[in-house]
Length: 195
Image (tube, rainbow, N blue to C red; front, side, top):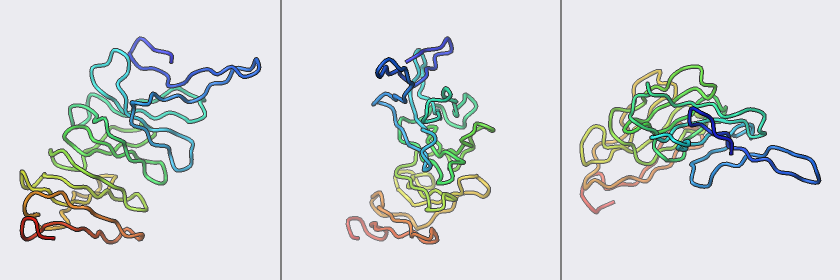
């Protein structure tokens, strides 16, 4: 890896094969990575050399350019969580956790991240099949009680709660329909330990 004065590094290594040098993508195994659906880019969360916080990056998978940092000190949260980010199917936006917010940022770095949730660390999250919305579990309305929410990844409208408060604080399991218009979940919604 090649490290720069600003603490970032190029996540590539040079491989010599029969006298020919080629750059190949070599992301450290302790980073959280996701490959774009078209295979052209990799989005990853890592702590660059000499950095005090984890950050969000995108890099071409063919090694044609260095990484672009998508996170910034102006993000709504205090640091990027070392959790796998989500990339929309069209590759246009990245959804990630900037603690304690669920955030979204354009994958080309053209603007800053926007919050999609209130200040409450989200649990499980998943994109709708078209990538327009993110469904997530959070305690953002009732402390100690997990609830199911949905928000548009572009932040065009506020998040919405999809259920009433779950009894007993159990984190619900959920599935999004193939059309993306329904969310099914199983949870102890009325009585603790009863599903």
